[in-house]
Image (cartoon, rainbow, N blue to C red; front, top):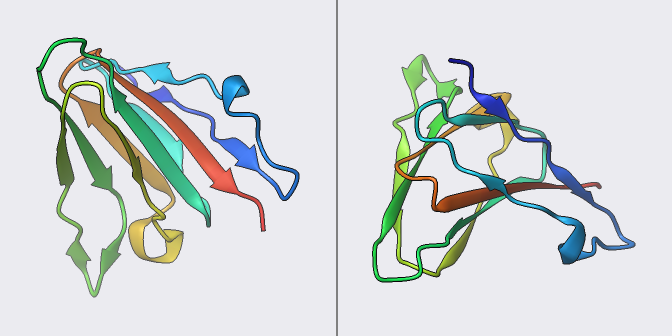
Length: 114
């Protein structure tokens, strides 16, 4: 299956009403992708209402001196939200691939407009 594309919300000097930024529910079977532009960051929330931690993995397509970048994995406790980034495209590539271990993880992408 193809990864689900997540379109980043653009944050300008005028701001962004957080209520308009709807998160995408994680799909463990297919994963997700985000176009990586300068100023891109991700917000990942574990919506589990009990005490179960969930795991997100970022697979970055870039590299340095012919070496690939190892995937970055983070365990997120129940009810906790993390922000990740930025991922400068010249180092981390033009796409961020995101894998989640459960649909209780939601993902929102943002990009700062300079």
